[in-house]
Amino acid sequence: MTESVKFLLDESRIPKHWYNLMADLPAPPPPVLHPGTLKPVGPDDLAPLFPMSLIAQEVSTEREIEIPEPVREVYRQWRTTPLYRARRLERALQTPARIYYKYEGVSPAGSHKPNTAVAQAFYNREAGVKRLTTETGAGQWGSSLAFAGAVFGIEVQVFMVRVSYDQKPYRRALMETYGARCVASPSMETSFGRSVLASSPESNGSLGIAISEAVEIAASRDDTKYALGSVLNHVLLHQTVIGLEAMAQLEAADDYPDVIVGCTGGGSNFAGIVFPFLGSQLRGGRKLRIVAVEPAACPSLTRGRYAYDFGDTGHMTPLAKMHTLGSTFMPPGFHAGGLRYHGMAPLVSHIRQLGLIEARAYQQTQCFEAGVFFARHEGIVPAPEANHAVKGAIDEAVRCREEGVSRAILFNLCGHGHFDMQAYLDYFGGRLADQEYDESELAMALAGLPSVAEPV
Image 1 (cartoon, helix red, strand yellow):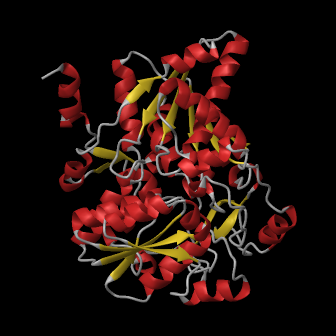
Image 2 (cartoon, one colour):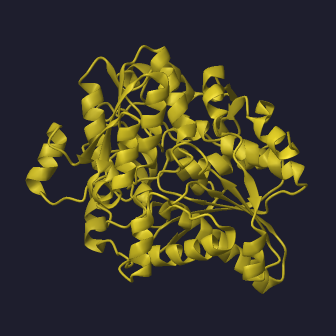
């Protein structure tokens, strides 16, 4: 057996605990509020949607949460994931920077999403749940939960945003291969979906609409719970296996990042790579720059307002304080469907408000150009979402070249683009255009934010 194979099969390298940033924050984030009473939500308020084990993780301030052995057993199929030094990319850019990327595309679903899907399916099975509903944008989350449902014997129904349902049929096929049922959202299967179609029959859909549909189904059935692929604290917690592994791998390489770059839609893959390093910094460790990259067509961190808002368009969820474009905001139908969400995870929003991270926005043609350049030098075709991180990392490397400074740059290549080749065909064919959101629609969505007095 070669040394490389020994490394891959050494399960001791898989983290035994998830890292919880809540333990190290200089100030706690604002509480999540009940939309009726405007008081902080309690466990009973969340019980119709989540098992108590996940609710406990959602509010935990413990630094380490033990990963159950059945979850680690499934993780062994693809974890630890590789950390690569992008030497060919460095040479092509003629940069003194040292570029590293953590590659999450080796999971069964081809992205980072199974890190939390497996955990959520396990905890729901332990609670006796028979059925899960969820939403998905580009399909990475939906296919991941479908995989996890197959592993733990749970029925899964996925509401897939209509524009991605049409753009990405192979993602839909993957979900069905795993045994899930995939429905285009907005749909005729829920009261809210029917109301959207009545007013906008040709609606492209949005993650906010799909969340409303999934929540409506879960709340109406005793045997069904809801699973979310991003945004919530427990979801971000599960993703920290990415950053924890990267810390150990960089230590073995005798290096440490000066800059971390991550793409952001709801915040899960960004939190996964960033939070362990940020926690170390907050505990007195090395300081670093952290850059969140988002789509210019759905720029919650760079254009959104930090305010209380609903996580869904139908206003069925609690109110969370986050960077938001407004729950009724309808993003254009660009190809990075996993980043088409009106809000940002409350924890990611909070650290942005604390000045611990930076944010920038890019157009999709810039990101595809960067993704193609990366693929031609590193050999991996990134998902459209991951192209945003690639673009951010390349810009940082060019900055090092211009300044004549060597820095270590780390980014999360959160998934491959094998199910997104139509987007690449559109790019090569000149059919992939930058899309702009309607400023007047954004203004209307922001004007409709809930009026909430700050809790004392």
